[in-house]
Image (cartoon, rainbow, N blue to C red; front, side, top):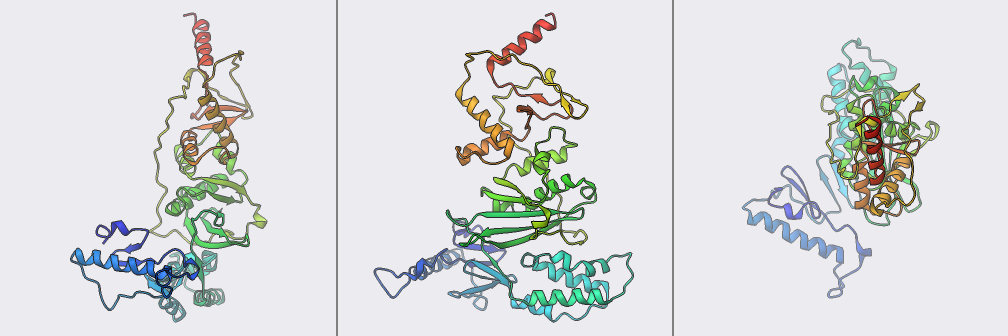
Length: 428
């Protein structure tokens, strides 16, 4: 299916194995009609053209369409447990009825089955993990089976929430649409997030909820490292949605910027997380815990078998203008003061404008982790790629190193001065 209809994906068609959904136009065009025929709406005509073209491609390839499963020109479509309509989606009645009609569990296996069905619709339910905590705790091997009031209350509450008409809005990528916000909160067990977009009134409307649990190693990280890990894991979940989209990243950990910009990283995995995070375009916003109500602490659920670990990513450094000198490293002194190599500045040094401007934008980005207003998207991507192993300390641009951070000397004349000094001081 994907190979035959690849020219229609994803603009006009969505494929799930052997199921396909033909998409209607993105707009109703305010229900305007064709000039040639005032009885036909523009949106209906556009859909009819697509509907004629896609079955023709299927027929030409020698495939057939199931008549009993075929539906067209409908306002909403039930696909894989979700009802899709113009600009929104919700839980299908089939899934809702299964949850509402679920009998009271009598074994741990039945509780796990109920929680698995609830997890299927987790993207629609805020704080699902917190609601299901009593039931999930009951499924542990070291816990004796004892169904009491707290389990009954959680069971009934989940059935009631899933039975409600929960609708999720579609993310709008058009220019001039509302700002995209991603709020993330991490605990020692997991990270919880909600993807939102501002509506016409400036209010945040939830689009998707997502959560990931930490591994045993990750759960032992300090809180700043947990926040870092949580941000990276959530961004990996949303990477197909947020790639090349500028958004606002909201966290309740004020130390996150310092953590990203610190020169003394503990190990390679954390460096990998930072590199992955910096591939996205975002403004980092700190929200105090008291006002950070949307993603308020994730469920106490245990790790599921299908939740993956963070993958390592390798990036292109592109360092033709960066010439680090390993002999001039800096070592940490008393964890507060840093010995800085003194470089005499001379007047009338001829500096290529391209390097000077690039370094200025690089320093501006590393100081705030925000996109400089005067640059374009492609130029900003270059800056982010090259900033992976760089940081700012005491207004100096430096290169990350495990023990000895290095000052970046980008002026050609200054580089020659350093080499001449080293040559003389070493008596060569």
